[in-house]
Length: 548
Image 1 (cartoon, rainbow, N blue to C red):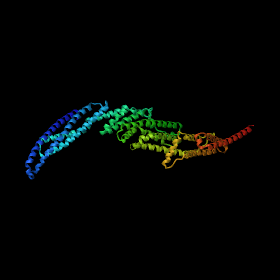
Image 2: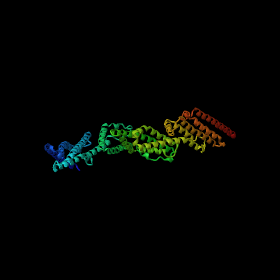
Image 3: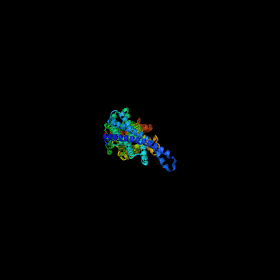
Image 4: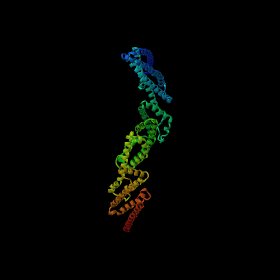
């Protein structure tokens, strides 16, 4: 039904209802006259009560008069409410939601109240006139025409009683008003809260648009009270996820979906590339969580402040999922996959460090009261942390075994320091630096807690010692590999390697192993150096004698 037809129908209903009210008044007058006559008849015939007692039921006509009077007042009020509704519908239809939104919301609320008033008064009038109609039919106290008018009035009142329901249907006045409000809700979200840039790491400046937030809250309140919250939530998630994606777009996150080449992990260039991508991932994840998602969370909580907590948290999680938080978690998972290596341990520690730094933010955004609506993100994050911690433990604990596996390889032909020796000492020094040591200890603590065991400070030192012990055993085997005919090269080899260990004094590794360990290697260096020097002098004299 279009607007003009609706107005014509309402006008016709008003006229018929007014006629019905006048007819009801006529019924009341006739009943008053009838009650007077019936009262006189009852007085005259009171001497014969046993025979005419059924006639006393006519006295109930007095009650009908009261019923008619009670029904006229709410019916008249319904007519006034109908006139108010018609006027408000015209004003709401012609008003713009994008103008003075506060005034528009007040106007819509007035229309809601007028429709409710019309509904209540129509219902009250129906209750009274329904009783009148039934009594008239049962007792024959009025003409068929008057009874018919009362019934017609009831039909019209029932139609008016459902005016609010029809107004909320598609094409109704209230439905059209809600569509305008939903459009304005979307416009405000688009226009008043711009995407963040990487330089806006905290995202606070956008949350201070208090005027816009209050308008959004008012829109949510009106839409929610009229069962339109679901559409509101869908609109919010769509708009704010687009804004979040726009904020992340300058980061060029395509690298998150590129593979990490497992077969090139031992290559220095590839390892450098992987480390660079992890560092980039760490910085981008920090901006995504501390900047974009924290801002979106604050905004979502503010906008849906008057709703149950689950409404805001559920809506925010939808924004987070659509904005691509899962791709960051998937990249971290890729780092945990593939062959285990010393370089992978460093990568895992960097991933853990990034996640651990953001743990308070993850707790606020996806934990606590939000937990029930964040199961997917929580499960992905827990799985990533589990893989990182277990992978770090396994690699660190297998390092000594990996050193042992290299024992069968031949020693350097020139008696120099093997690459494995310098790599292991540099690697252990790196693990003991502040960049990695606290993170390594924390992963060990977590792993042991899962096993219901406790971490002890000497655990890390003991494992480092085991790694170096395997290196020393390798040196003994490699020194023998030169054979009895090449003892000077063997002594040179031992002198160089013990000298390398002695040079660790003052380093993180040297401090952990202790002064006695460093001094012992210096003594071995001097010992093998002396052997090599004596042998060299002996050969020099022998050559001189031969030359003479």
